[in-house]
Each structure stands twice: as C-alpha cells, then as structure tokens.
Amino acid sequence: MASAELISTISTTDLVARLDSDENLYMVDVREPDEVADWQIPGVHNVPLAFLESRVDELPRDGHLVVICAAGTRAQQGAQILASHGLPSSVLAGGMRAWASTYDVVTGGYGGATVVQVRRRGKGCLSYVIGSGTTAVVIDPSLEVERYREIASAHRWTITHVLDTHLHADHISGARELVAKTGAALWLNPSDPFDFDFAPLTDGRVIELAPGVHLSVSAVSVPGHTEGSTMYQLGNAAIFTGDTLFLESVGRPDLADQAEPFAHNLYRSLHERILPLGDGIMVFPAHYGPGVAVHAGQFVARPLGLLRTSLKALTLSEGDFVAWAIANVKDRPPNYQRMVLINAGREVVDAEAAEMELGPNRCAIA
Image (cartoon, rainbow, N blue to C red; front, side):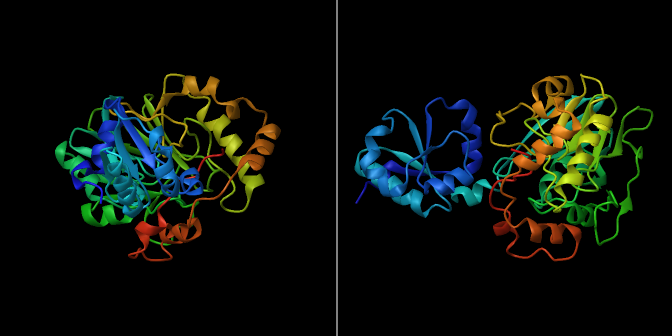
C-alpha cells in the first residue's frame, strides 16, 4: 500500500491560485485521451491511469504534482501509484466536476464605473457586475447567484438590473433566480424566444448607474449568434459583446440550424455595430476558449483596435466570412438543446442541472 503521507488533496480554488504563482506546478490528468481532448485544464499533461506506472519516470521529481480525473476516483488511484514510487502528489478534490464550478474575479475601473469580471474557469464563462455609486447591473449571471449578491454587498451596491446578452446554450442562466432574490428588473431582448416575464430591450435603452454621471449601459441589437444577441456599452470605455465577438474568434451562427442566414446577420452586426466603434474601447466577451490565456488579476478583455487587426474573421468580405463561418463550426455544446429550453423558461431547473453543464462552452467558431 502506498504511503498516505505522500498523498494530499487540493481544492480547485487553491489550484487557480497556483496556476500563475507556482512555477513547479505539474498537473497530471489520468483520464483517457479523448476525455482530455474534449475538456481540460490548460497546461495539463495527459498520462492515462493504465499507463501511469510505466511512465512515472517522465514526471518531475522536484515538481508539485497535482493528479486530476473526472471526479477524483482515478486521480486517487494515480496518486497511490506515484506514492509507491516515492512521489508526493495532491489529488484535485472533485476533479473536473468541481473545476466546472470554480470561479475567480478581477476588478477594475472603466468609464467612471467599477467592473467586476466573474470568471467561471472550468466553463470559460464570463459574467459581470458593473457598479457606480450605490447601483449595480449584472450581465450574464451563472446559476450560482450568491456570488453576485456577495460582490454587490462588498461594494455596497444595490443590484437594480439583471441582463443576459442572449439566450444561452452552453450553461444555465441565473438571471431569473437573481431577480427573484434581489427584486431587480430583468431586461432581455424579445427577439430571443423567452417564455416568461421581462422588460423588453430596444436599441439605445439606457441605465444610469449614478445620478449626474454620464455612465450608461445601452442595448444594441446584434443578431447572428442568436436572433436576440445584444451588447451593452459602458460609455465609450467598454462594450460587453456577449457571444458576438470573442477575443479569439466570433460567435457560432449554427445553433438555431440557420447557419447561413445567421452568418450573414453576424457579419453585418460585427461591421455595422462593433467595428465602427473606437479602437480604444475595451471588449469584454461572455466566454473565452482554450486558446486564451487567463491570469490572476488580469481581465479577459482586449481593446477593439487590437482585435480589429489580429482576428482574421474581422478582415473577410461578407461572402468569405459566411463561407468560413459555415465551414468551421465544430461540435455543439453538450446538452445545448435542453439548456436552451431551460433558459427560455420552457423546462425547469432540476438536480441534473450541474451535470448538464459539464464540458466546454463551444460557443465560438473554431
């Protein structure tokens, strides 16, 4: 039996803190290659459990080894194998299931407001609390709504409005639950088929966060990813682009099975609604993919001017863009059809919600 003294556990929260700070961190994912290829923590080394014994010599003796699997069982077995060879390691508590609900935040000032970016690290989901004075707006909240209430409380803000950028297909929205717990107004775009009460958005509708401060979040209709995709602009300082524009790509147009017309809409939304804005406006998306580096204390955001020159999709003609968009959509988000029904208000959230959300977001064109 391997010595229990060589085996410890590490929480996903502690792992997030170490990702940037621990140069000796070495993550070993003992799941099968197809599992790891589908969804992984950036920087992992895949050594399937069945081959770990024969590949122990590949692992660094001076590294801080963290063993990862789907829920923790295989990782524990892997840690025992490592311990039998004298290698200490930590098992990631809860595995990738726990990673799916791991968050951190970044806070900074834009346009006279404080922007808090809430990053759901295991899903690549980004949501926002934007506050000034005593008032705050929440954009794209995930289902764990207490996080947003805690942020607002820490800043002494009252959440007055809750907004989604679109009808989400990759995760369950917490918008309605957050509204129920705060009494905030729910503003949504009626072009997406929501089947519950909300205040309908129109272009240019403004929320004044602080009296006498020229600070607003304005809705701009940008169909393409969904029919009701919406952006929210914070003065001339920041724009919250939802799934219309990412840092590494643009939103996929195929989830409603109308890829070609939606791709045309997406092109026009990008070129008529986003690209005319100034280069200095900061783009805050609703998701990020595995190719985007995420660091503690740094926003997942880029100036529009940088994206304008770095993203090939923004340089294509409309015909080339549509052909590219249709040709490059990959696997759809897991369980997306049921999550759309839940977010539209046509099915209830049940105990299986967390299980449905497991896996990557897959909302961008690859």
